[in-house]
Length: 169
Image (tube, rainbow, N blue to C red; front, side, top):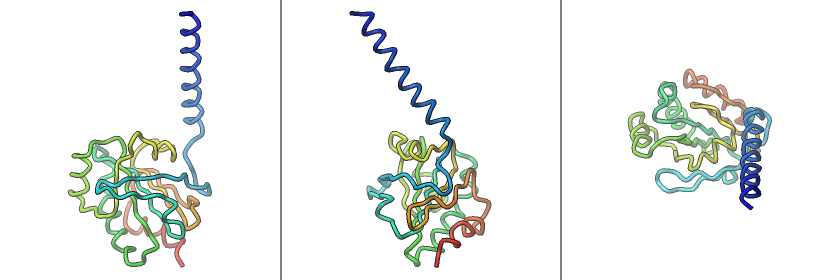
């Protein structure tokens, strides 16, 4: 009986390792693909679902307070958020990746970030998008299709704008 349990446990472990290996070989979710659905609960308790923003452009930014290369783009992302805010058809969402809440909130305060941000609980969103590091940003068009993937930080507000404006009327 012990041998059966041991072999069964080993088989289950191998299945999980195989799934992880398969996912890592899939590569990142890319341009032209349907954006994976997600639910983000912001630090203020609001729920944000991708499906709720159908018809809008969504800027989905993965970041962390410990990420040094996230810092240069933080103010540019907030500036872009303010720039598009009155349009009502460009949504910015920040996904805090593998972080602690006090440090994350300190980061948001330090850079004056006001668009909705929340923790990636159990790394569900980053796994769905197959994020490999931070910062990474996905621009999702009005039909839920990924139109741009930015690996690493945006270099400027103009860089951000150049990935959003082609999607707007």
